Image (cartoon, rainbow, N blue to C red; front, top):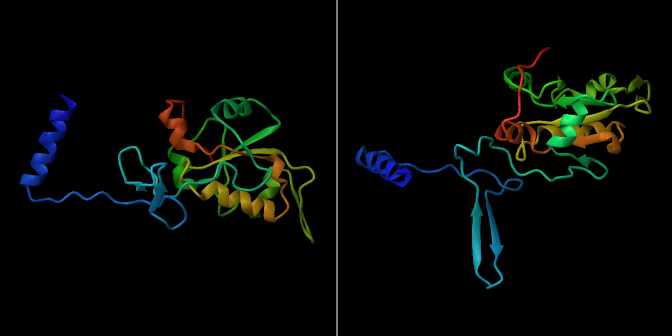
Length: 188
């Protein structure tokens, strides 16, 4: 039945003269094609296209954005919500945060985190940040192709935040939503 509906939709689009062309999205860095060489020697181009599931236009982020950062899954995020030793930080911009976020998260946008490390246990001094009292931070953004939280984490480390106190939830809101986990409107 699903195939029949798909065929009917394609026929309607073709009959109306509207051309459908999928938008190629970035995969790694600026590249929107990844060429894989199969064991047979055949080369295969892997692309990423905008679909109803591919909601984000970023590019694939590494599981560990910088050495020392600890990757976490939903289980660790759930546990961090109730653990006072952790601060759950939504590193997306305010508009994303206000729409929906993980319960218990605070919003420190990726563009502001290096200026707001005092909220994460660091002290600002004449020589820069002293992060000896830094809290454990679970940071996230929109998901595996979102560069916002990795960018923020790199800035934090650059300015003195200990990498081993940063926990990266790469799955972010995309995976959280896909798993049907509860979200709340962001509260400022």
